[in-house]
Image 1 (spheres, helix red, strand yellow):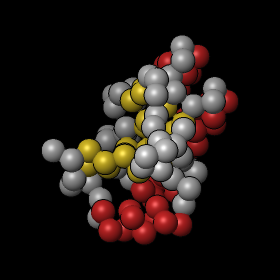
Image 2: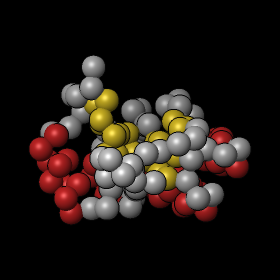
Image 3: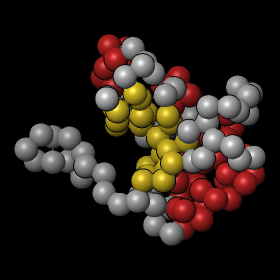
Length: 117
């Protein structure tokens, strides 16, 4: 829901982030349980998966999140977020070119979540 003072959306509720070292099947099962338990947002964080596995996994998780009325974010990878039709992308200071993300944001109905330390 947009904050009237800033115009930015505020996400409330459980923010579930997938663990890295799980098989896709187990990860989907655990994500489904988190969503059934009320997670408002599911974030895919896969640092060690092969590139071939990730797009299908992202789409499967997005579908499940949307079925439960939750948002779906991709960690660190704007291209994967676009390809999977994610609701947003979470990036850290060293993860992406922020100017490119701002440009993407202007053409997509996306949430951008930045983690700057």
